[in-house]
Length: 445
Image (tube, rainbow, N blue to C red; front, side):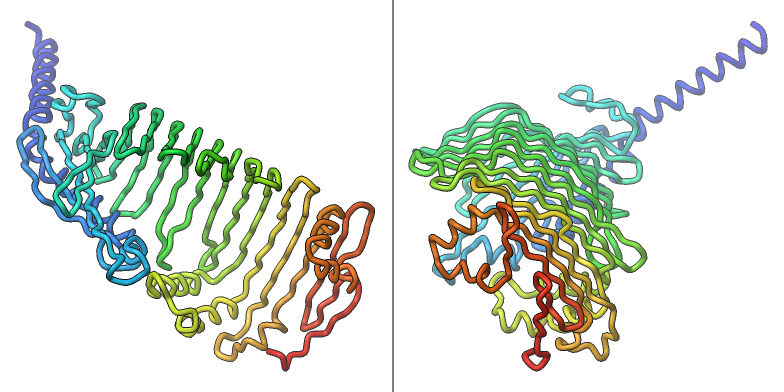
């Protein structure tokens, strides 16, 4: 045997030994890391919501695979108060607990996962499948249809897919039906980044003569945390036909809705854009309604936005309006004093009698936060509005309430063809509507 052949064979043997170690030894070593990754991801999700508590009931760790159970409860807070009702202790309800049972196949190459559905040999800390159920205070448990298939990356990143096969369920006179659904979510607790994408098949819930049904729903997006206490990223949502019926009579719904939203940071300034296209189903005695909107926010102080959000979240489920304003006033002043621009580049509402078109722009100049007062806000603000209203809509409004015609009589709306128009501008305390100046007395504020 030549020396070269011997070296080649020796290399192959060495490779096989390494492969054997990866397959046989790594599962036991990585089992603990995989367990910790599962806990980290669940606890991170709970921390992000702020209203959930995750506890590990058990984790039976084997060499090649492990089985564990986690319980997710709603802690005392805004979400619990909202769900339990607003009428006081007599209206409180016992909130159920979400139970997650997970089978985890671990190892750099999770060979044991191939014995189950959607197993994978992709390298990582492990591959898992989870089932969900809801447990009530009386001990009753209801299984949630569908399974979650997860892959834990070498860095702890968790890729999860919720897979629901078509089916139906009937309980106490209520029937639910659904088509195939898959929702993919990738989380990384070390960075806080989240990516998601989902396609929800048609589903309906029927209770006697009442019906709620959706033909299809798709969404996608990503989010990354910021030092200001909120996340930025983008999201898209497409809804195809939402129907609501009550007592066998159609009560409304949507033909379609498309939403595209994005938030981003430029240094310590926040910008956002949202576009919306929504068309309703026919509303009884009115007809269909379509909304097109393009809304933009530019240059808001990110720290002030974060502080205002924190203050609002701390108000509880049923805040007193006066107390709430007193609590957030300083944060709101800081946001306004920092300056920003808010634009409605498009806000069109189409009704059977025509389309109302609007373009609105609001710009607040930056001021010294230490000397900011509500009266100075009027001098620091510039605004404009360009609005067109169909004549048929004005005629209908006037017929229903004669006082609605006052806007035409006072010159706020001027006839132009088959529409009424309003062009308004505001700058340094002076409001101009269709060319007519209307000073605003500063002493009134």
